Amino acid sequence: MYQAKGDLDRAIDDYTRAIGLDPEYARAYRARGEAYKAKGDMGRATADFQKSAELEQK
Image (cartoon, rainbow, N blue to C red; front, side, top):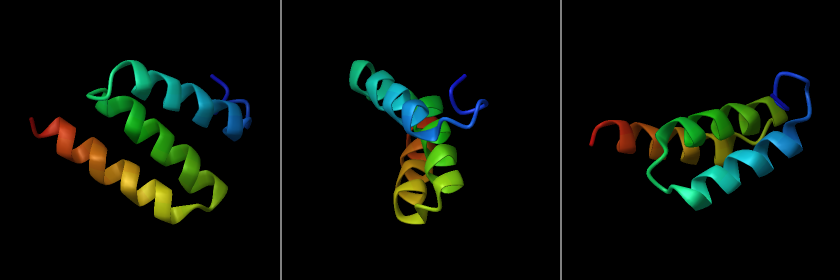
């Protein structure tokens, strides 16, 4: 919800916590990647998109 409100830093924190609780949670990686992309951090966004794709293939 933070991401929809434009609070990207809080959204990233929430997605990171979700990933900490379940490192196999592909949707959290994808969502965090979208937040990083919106912030212009394409390096981190790409890494999260790749991890999400890897987990979705399992």
